Image 1 (cartoon, rainbow, N blue to C red):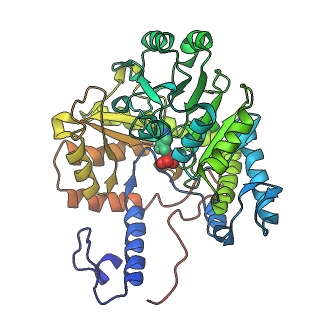
Image 2 (image 1 turned 30 degrees about the vertical axis):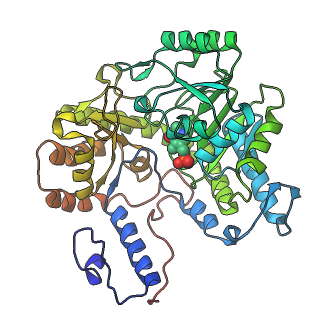
Image 3 (image 1 turned 120 degrees about the horizontal axis):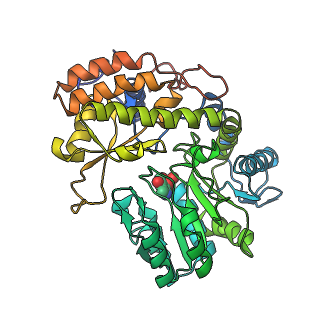
Length: 446
Ligand SMILES: *Cc1c(COP(=O)(O)O)cnc(C)c1O
């Protein structure tokens, strides 16, 4: 196979032939990466792959252009088609999320969060959010976007058994702190946030309610998770490349429930935290949203079924999957406590050696951030590769051979490669059945 032709070592080599130009080495290593993922089981809960049609527009001249501002009100010439694409993208977003307002110019989820923070809070304001070890995101913490904006963060009490915010404790906190903003949303997201139960105390305090849907945006688009805007949230931000299988980009949607929200969100994005906003990504996002309209419900449905099946299959093989009593998960994510199997870091590394890609994760009771006891697994990408409930037993068996039985990772890797040959095509999209891992390649070396 290709891996051997120009590499010193067969096992995940770092060294390429020194005689090659650096540009050629980059091409080589990029191809290695591509081929590796083609032969691997991708289980990172925040990842996905773009559809063939989205990839096509992503890989276009749009990438080379600038378009500051909004359609029809640009600072550059050359935006005639760009304006059409961006307007269509916003309209699709308003349609998919059934709302009045969408801004599709943030270049990532974190950038969207910064834009929202600029719009709805100012330095010194108080904000409530989910803590990092409870699944909160870096951008919700002092070391990230919230700290950058100079906000003071208070974390909700978390119910470790339910793996969710404790609604009573959270209400107490919100009444006590009286935050300017109440932020919800997690990167370890098993169950919907109890927004209905928090409603009365949020109303009482009158804070702006912000929901970071980065992880679950595709499930919301597919109407299979909670519907935050209908549950009283003022603004939603998100990444567009996790359960929503689009380009690496960000989005903000809202029903403009608060005064001047539209203007301040627009200004937060531009000129707040972006200048040019990656026009190729906007086109790819538009295609992704069009696909979500058509295939999103079936995809979200199968994603959640697969997560539940995989959790059950791992549990049956002796792994400590969290929240068995609650059916493990209502999202794309499941979490395994692997403390008794050498902890999250070693388990994730061993799985990587076997071409099973997942990540270590802090669990709410972990005290040492360097040694997380959890393993986080997502079902969204393997779902788009066509896997169904019956395939989850095979995936679970491959994982269990590494984690529990201690089989050699080289043996398991060989079996993963064989298994994966049946799952290399894109589903729940236009051009269904096209290869998921085929990218343009030029012949010849540099
Ligand atoms: C991933 C994530 C983000 C950040 O997204 P990027 O697109 O990587 O910047 C923000 N919030 C949550 C909850 C996330 O999980």
